[in-house]
Image (cartoon, rainbow, N blue to C red; front, top):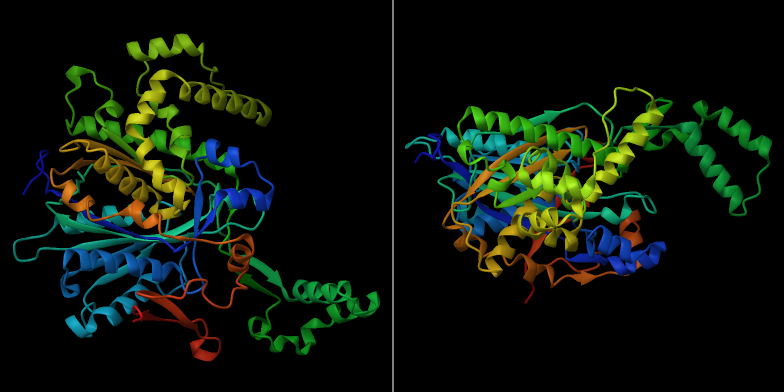
Length: 526
């Protein structure tokens, strides 16, 4: 079957999501950090953040979501030709996290479908910060589109991340976690996605996870200083002599310093980031990708321009990457303005706002900072106009509801917003048949992609089986002590005993087994 533009009709047939059973209530978090709950809740839209338990990680969350897709749709694993994972929370520097997911799924399905049921499935990890899963989606759509009558292709796109920030950092309140899976097929029951993608890529350092280096001298120096602070008397000169002679010390018997190196690379889950700069990168990238999409859509004659209807007016819903729930509400005014300049609507809005800050050609950092602050103020003014408030309420707001309850999912945030929108519209008995959705993904570093989807008339039969908000209501709240123990890795046993789920049971600690992760399926007891 061909789409209305003559292309093979491919897209998202179903979506599944798995989130941890644990969550931290934002009121409790605000009390813990002495923060203003009103600012976090009313200002950023935050109500709770999902927290992985001891036995959960990127692989278990992704595997749980794929299992839900397989079981709900009665899929034979032997017929799944591709599973591409988008993540920025990989568990290894070489071994794809997707292979751990395959390991768990094989354990679960081998008795029914054979021990080689996933042997011919192509798997890989794709990483570009928060947009990796969108990249995995687009390459899988291309692959499925090449299906033939004798080779009907079925692909699954997986997204899974643990959005973890340093304790007491400025990004801590935006944490969250979860995994998901998209079933990609021809003639999808949920969302047809045409081959028209706007892209903007700019190499920037707004958010990244570097390979940090630590020296043997600094490690032992810190240990000795800590010993002294805790009451272990040691003369300063002795400490200095011990540090000076460390290269010959028996401390090299410690694993990470066993090979004679002076420094080793250390990976941390929490990132280096500049929140304000990242927001500006987000705005610029999405705006540029939007323009690129509009140019491509015009070349493909996708719209009737005789009506002069703005592109964003043609999208019934707009789905965006949400590192926090109100991100789209704050970031989209820029595109709202660009898409309406020259129209009667914008003339009316401009009268309310007054003149926009004049552009500049200066390279002076102070002038740039002053201009950026002025533009931020202008965007906030746009967001408070009746026209934008109505636009946001009708097209964007439904996508932020689930984000408020889970927090940042990195690669999965855009698809969580998509599920949130669909399920909210189902509950409100909206008619989305054949309507267009605009989707805007972003990944720091930085890249944005803008594309669109056409809703299938069969969307209700798919969405009615999700029960997203019902499942969110059944989670377990944790206190601040448990939260910090989980964050620091000090929690020995699972807070909630695993049952009816995949669980991490062991990580090898020496020899050729060092770092090897092992999982098993834990059945429902009784």
